[in-house]
Image (cartoon, rainbow, N blue to C red; front, side):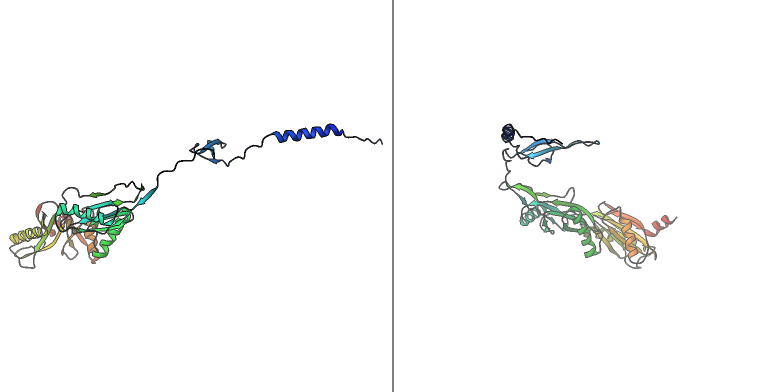
Length: 329
């Protein structure tokens, strides 16, 4: 078997190898690629370098890299969060409150609320509980007394004032307004003025009504089922005097005031033992339900025979038995 021997062409091979090496060395190395990331298009200091692959109804997403050569993004002025204090002022003869919100300290908020209340009502204004960066809720109970509570939001403040009514007086309250006073962001050295006082709308003086009935069995005739209601008065004393005076004039007997309220709804009901019950509620819609629940809480059942609005001027004589019989027919 022949043996073949091959002698390498040393000179030519060496030159070719050197040339190839030189060629590779002369090609510049590609720059290091920055890490690309999805973006909504290039922003300050960014370059768009491609798109992700779309498909199946999904569009491609732009890819960006940080452009190191771009000019630095200018920084905005320094900012700070500012506390926002709030508080309300009320008066014994006012049906609503004056609420100060957006103040930088508690003292300034209190001074503003007191000044607004005093300007409208004169002496006698005081402050409700207050706080910062939250809400205050004002509620009215069944005889017209106002309540206030604070919370982190309007909803939490409402829950707090309703709980307060039940805890302190076992009373049902209706929230009549809320005010939110959140903190805000502002440039350092350029204060923003957010302070404001919210005043009541319309007639903010309390309007009263009172009820009266014959005191004991001192009257001739069937007066035991009758209740006198006088409403729309500027003071509780005037409303009571009117109700008692009318009762005594009609019956010829000694009468007494039964229940006096302001800015609320009086209810008259007859219970299972045919006793007359006079109650009140802060809102008309639920007045009947509240009266029935009060009877249930004392172990009896009631039928509401009439509801009266304390703010509407009037003089009424309500015969509860007659109204009950009319309902049962």
